[in-house]
Image (cartoon, rainbow, N blue to C red):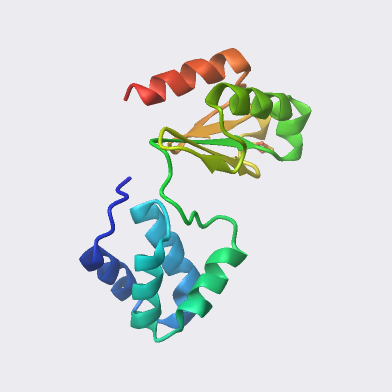
Length: 154
Ligand code: FES
């Protein structure tokens, strides 16, 4: 996932949606998929090219919790917080992750970003974790440490 902002690539994304303001949410998703987060440069360009105010674009960005607004750490870790995973220990796993990574859920540093997610479609193998877009099931604290170490070495 590239995080460097590229104005030309951003224009191509917006053109892919025919510069239609009603496609704003889809454009925002495409930006996050391409640049990993939505920053001031991206919001300004989207607003200009869709003929919206920056406040309008930021309003949508802030409304949806899925849109990351800061550059993520090198390894992005999501732990499922939904019911099935909670029943199988995701709260304890979250506490372990916060302690071992030294960050709290919903935050990060240059090395790691730790985010909640609400069902990864892997309920039968709870608790589920996503590390850098790869889903893992039946993750206990020991496996968590191994998966994070493996992801860091790639
Ligand atoms: S509830 Fe966690 S993967 Fe579905």
